[in-house]
Length: 316
Image 1 (cartoon, rainbow, N blue to C red):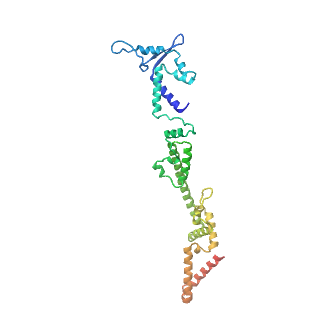
Image 2: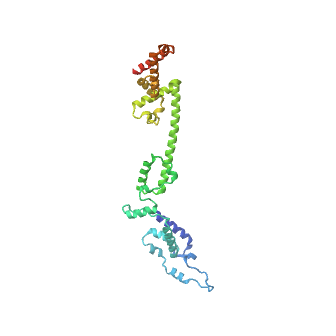
Image 3: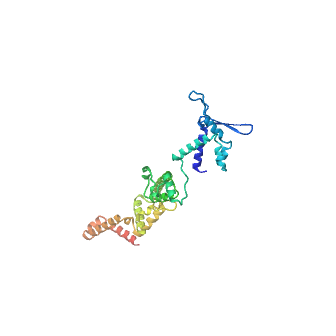
């Protein structure tokens, strides 16, 4: 039974309640049917003349007892439906009501054969399905929540949904679910990343002294920038379990050690610090050549020795 048939039958059932009949079995198993005002037969007096609508009674009496069977033929479903009515007038009224409901558009007909393009186009229009996937329109409150990464996913989904003849309401509901789930996942990821970053910082500060912390981080960053194509973005790279490399203390310590092997002391950890190192070295060398007394008096000889030692370690 299709949805349309079920709806018509529901209307028919409702109409049946309006058509009141009293069916009483007699000795021969025959049924006599008494109709109310809805059947058109009445025994009320009219015009004060005391007459009745005898023509209606004569018509009803003219029907054979098996009029339902004759109307239904060999269709058992139709016969069961006809037996719900006490008169032909009741059947006519139910049919009229059912047609009115169908014409109102409250009942959607079943999908036609997909091979019939014209019928499918008409059916899609009845269902509110757009002609193309791009025709699905989402409310502004929902589109504002979409990010660039969502757009290709949404385009793929609407194409799939259109191929399945999904109504606009379904597409909107599914899109809202998708966006909400992404927002929840993103928020959970941000919270997890922040917690992991704080834990990594605490662990590294415990391992390194206050003066070493920033320099060691610079060494790690400089090494990774020189060793990979992604530069400083290596900290955002994620492991299969979702953790970022930049939030793993052991990895940062390894990168820092590799940076020290490559660049020497932490003074070479960044281009800025290296520039300051070279500038100070050149300044001391100038004093050493022009004012040797000042060179020794201000302890520049010792500072220069430290500078050359750092550079020697760097070259190893």
